[in-house]
Length: 252
Image (cartoon, rainbow, N blue to C red; front, side, top):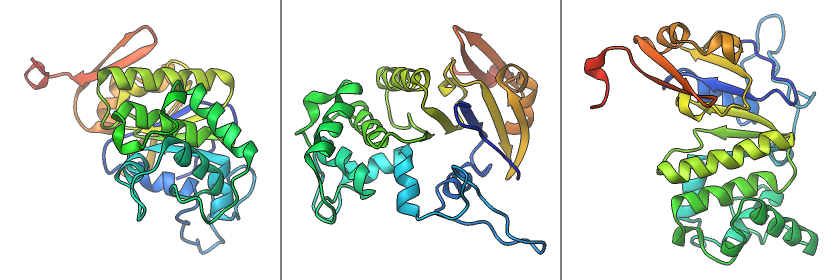
């Protein structure tokens, strides 16, 4: 696989389960490293560098995922934490445990501003396990943004959210994209591709099956090949919706 994403290039990494999306995410965040090739190392260069302190890199790349959400909501050894503590942990690159770093008044002010920007300032003192899934996911988004990251990586970001919460969450993502933060969306749901995303990368069995402008790549033919099933694609208001081409497989 060879892939380059430029700053400001809102991109979706789309593919079925098992296509390699999770491995790609771990490579981007340097949680995993590629195997060396006979002719030299296979670098993963992020923000111009291929050697990073993982904690420092993660502070510069905000991440929101259903797995991270569940880790915070289920709690750590100290139990579930407040929204403020969750957001502050973004500065320390920890999972909500603050005693291993210094929390300043400036950090607290930035955490409050991040919660307010996501429309949940009133939840600062509430524990995550006392919130709805939609509220907690917005807190995770505030945590990802509190350090002013160069890019926001969304890994299956609406998993576990109901229809209204999903719509509200993606509306916030659209605002973030329009404000200039680079969006990298990793998903297998076509309907999560917000209009602001201009580039589509299709993964299939660990390889890039197609890559280019959304208008060229997001087609029924490409999706059918990648998902290995005949699909139809509909568009409405800048959003796309995929469904099986066989009427017998479509929901009634």
